Length: 244
Image 1: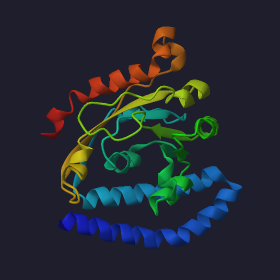
Image 2 (image 1 turned 180 degrees about the vertical axis):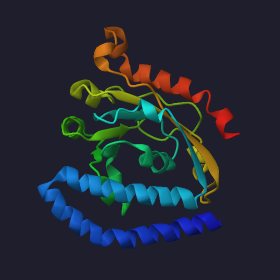
Image 3 (image 1 turned 120 degrees about the vertical axis):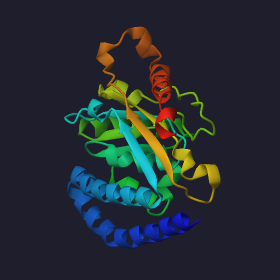
Image 4 (image 1 turned 30 degrees about the horizontal axis):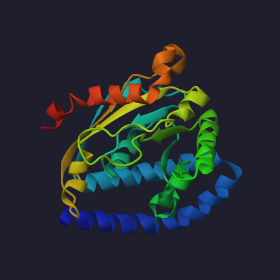
């Protein structure tokens, strides 16, 4: 229980530090959105590292060399826990935002920092607003920002991946950016498996080989979401031996 209490105290500390930065970043964002996002990301990375350290989370990273450093990408990962983002974020290259459900936009601390780091908030019930989010994502990619998306649409309650939403990879298809499959294992052991306590655990994050859409055949491209899902499933097969 002590880890949970320390994490809460740290989050309060982060909130206090955040307040003056919001005003500064809001001013910078008006003139240079990318600069504001870069500054914001540095703070979020620091906070994420601090929280995972206090939680006692050991992060094992594989395939980091697969991620190109000179071009924006669409990271596509499986989703089991709120700690997916916390453990993954410090290892993302370039300025990177997330595609998240719209309700997170109004969550204190989390929503504010997501907004400053060029994250996108998806309305799952309004098709028109959903299309606007995709168009905004394409525009961000073209301006140099990478994006993370969890195509399952929600956290899986089991080890099996949920079906990937059709159209979830449109941002990559329309912007022609590389897709990086991201396999994440055991984040649920940090928090969700024993709510409300936070426990020490090992987490594996693996970055797959980039998928360039102009290098794959039409059939694979037609079933792109399932193709990436299969890659992530295959990558995760070796993870259990790494965390035992």
